[in-house]
Structure formats: C-alpha cells, structure tokens
Image (tube, rainbow, N blue to C red; front, side, top):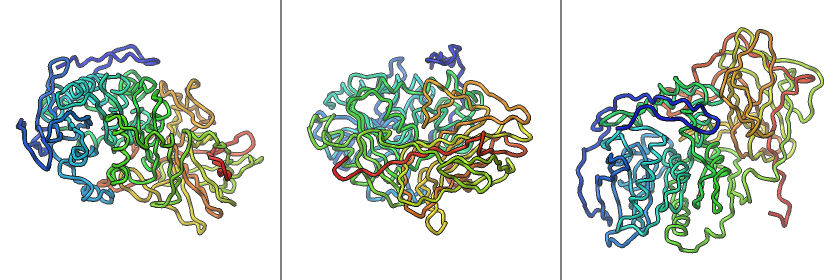
Length: 567
C-alpha cells in the first residue's frame, strides 16, 4: 500500500498536497475473472504464461499474461496496459455498429488491445496487464497517476530484460491503452523503443472530465462504474475527485504527461470523429512530443474498426518491424502526416501532408449576424442580438452557404459577445454541422460507434473564459481554468471558444451551420455510450450580440487547393 496523500507539484500548479479518494472494489468474479491460476500452456500456436507475477519497485505484485512464439527465441515485446481485464475479450457486439469484424480478432484479444494471435504469428511477444489494484493485482488502483507511470516503467524494464525478449519493447492500443503511452514514454525507460498511441487523451481535465469547464457527468460515471470497479482492494474514485476538483489544479496536472520529454519513435493515430474524448488530445500529443521520428494519421471513421481492420494492423506491424526488429522498410518513406478529408459518414479521401497543423491553412472569419441568422465574410455594421431560453433544447443557429468547393481542416474558434439574463454564469454548447445542397443534415462518425455526428464541437462555461496568454493562439484559445469570473447583471463579455479540430470538404451549394445553445446539441438514450453535461448553471436567457461593437465570428481553417506540381 502507499500513502493516500500524493504531492501535486507541477509547473503552474499548486504545491499543496491533495488526497486521493478511493472506493471499495467490486469482486473480480463479478466481472468474469476466473481467479489466479498461474500456468504455462501451448495454445493456438503460442506459448502462453497466464497470471505471471511481476514485482514493482515497492514489492507490490501485478499479474500479466505473456503470449510468445513457441520456439522461445528472443522476440520484441508489445505491452498492452489496461484496467479492463486481461482475462478475456470484451465482445464488440456489445457496442452496436462498432464496425469490428468478428474475423479480425481472436479470442485472445483484450479490449482495445493488439491481438496476440496475429502478433505472435509475426514473431512478437505480447503482454496483457492487470495494473496495480485492478482485478487480482495487488495494491490500490489509481488512474493516469504518477504511481501508475512508475509501475508501467517497471513493467517495460522487466519485459525488456527477460530471456525471451530481444530487449526492445513497444506499446500499442486504443484509448486508455494509448493515454498511458504518453506518460511512460516521457519517463524514458531504457528498453522502450517505440509507441503507437491510438486515440488517447493528453489533458484529462480539458478533454474528458470538464469540457470548457463544464463537468461531463455521463461517460465518466459510466466508465467508473462499468469498466474499472473490479479490485481485491480499492480503486480511485474519479467521479468524487472530479467533483472535489472543479478547477484545473495540482490533481489534474498530476495526470497529464510531459509531452516534450517523449523521445521514442511514435506512430500516432487520431480521428476527427472522437469529438469530446480523444480527437484534441491525440493531435496535441503528436504536435507536442519531442520525438524526431513521428508520424500522424487521422481518419474520419470509427476508432475500434479502424484499429483492427487488416490494413491498419499491417501498418502497425510495419512500424514496429522498423523499430523493434530494426528492419528498414517503407516506414522510412512514410509522409509525416496523413489525413482523411471527410465529405459525410463513410465518405472521404486520404491525403499526405508535411505537418500538423497544416502550414498553408488560411484562418478566415465568418461573422455572425443575429438579424438573419447568417454567417458572412464581412462584419455587419448594424448591431443586433439573438436571445434564447438558457434551459431549452434549442438555441441560436447561423448559416453560411459556400459558393465554391471549400475545405476546412484544422482548429476553429468561436468569438462571441454574450450576456446572461437572470444568471451570473452561462454554459455554452457549440456544434458545427454540414447541410447538403437541399438543406439536409449531413452525418459523420461520432464517439465510439455512432453515425449521426457533427463536423466539430466546442464548449464553454463563461466564468472559465480567462485565456492562458502563454499557450493561446489566434486559431486555438486555451483556457486557464484556475478561477471563476462570474458575471454581473447586464454585463456583456467577450469570450473565445475552442472548437475541436476537424477536416471536412464542403461542396459548392452546401452549408455550414453553427449551433449555439445551453445544452448538449447531441443527446442519446441512457443505454447508448456517449457523453453528457446536465450539471449546467443556465437560467433565464442567453443573449448573443453581433455586429458593430460586437464582431462575433467563427474563425474557420480554409485550406487552399494544392496547385499542380506542388505538395
């Protein structure tokens, strides 16, 4: 066991210690765990060691399953670090429309993790892990914590020094399995040779638990209750901690990786579709890591399907062959960036680029005009306003029809002048949507497996409007989230709202619609895995002012077409 009080020292964060709140774990048997049964077997062309004990630096033992080639020759190792249980796969049939083909994975594949049956066949060892305090591993479970990073460091070094290891360790996997990669890579274990973070948060506060300062209270509780409650001891109570820490402080800083310290080769994969979870963080991770050899791929589909589809797995293998087996191959000629420019759900085309964000992007303002609900390239001279019930399920809409094919790729920003009538705060929910030439809503992939999503989303609790001047740019405002600035009666304030990155082609005659309202624009029945923000501070009416002294505008990233012979 370790001290429940953890120091939270981090640049710009409070030096006061914080207490981690735990809750009792649910018996692992309730989650289908068969109990510890250490054994060594040959199955499906693999030598498998189940429930191998690995000691951590403080003597706590965690348990892993090791899948390796039966000839026992030294092999490169892939680590899949996940709290979801190494004992069996979570069937993707439980998530309707996930897009994962049954034939793509074997019974040995853990949730969101590389399939050992494939990788062992290609000369790799794979380690599936039950981290500290999860399932039957000893200790108490904390998530994305300094302690977890130390444990993962210890496991990487253990794996890199086994007789059956060639001394090179990589990490792979989706979501949680990606998020921990940033953290351990920044710590620099000597035997870690490459990472493949596939859609993973890099700022837990801004990207998962408090969008724009508004607490997310659906996905996080579901995740905490249904995905990670199983333990012989206790698990960190993230829901209680999020309630106790409504502002960005030492607790949240302790969970974020020091991205510039990441130096190993990295193949980073993001999607435009994971608005509200992984899109922003994965792209920030690629942009900010210090690796000289790094590649970015951004798709517009469903993240699980894209991870497991055979052509994606082959690209993963090429990457790891290059850096874990030291085999020169086509990875050396890969473009630094590869993005999919979407037109609608399931339709888009990939294009090679040199960098992210794209250097040739032209930030272009589209000015709001409350009189007509329009977005125009010039600011309206006449001041006007639109108001709506802050608690209603609809709000204000503004539209711009494109007279030529226009690609928008990158960050958007919404600058507004707003007033809260009847409240000292206001929560704003923003969606950018696409309408076809007949005015019909165009759908996109969304979250894990949905097919009716937006172009992009943004959020803001107006009392959190204070910008961080050191990290904000004209295209991407970054909020400090260190204090609240409540509104005075009748006060109109300017705000800047970060809209998460996206890439969309609007054909001539198609329309961009901007939606601003006081609740989630996309809402789903309780049984659907999604996010929600119902703990709002909205009351009375929201007022948006435009024109004249109030040049409210949407800044969009217009990408000019590449001329023949360029690129």
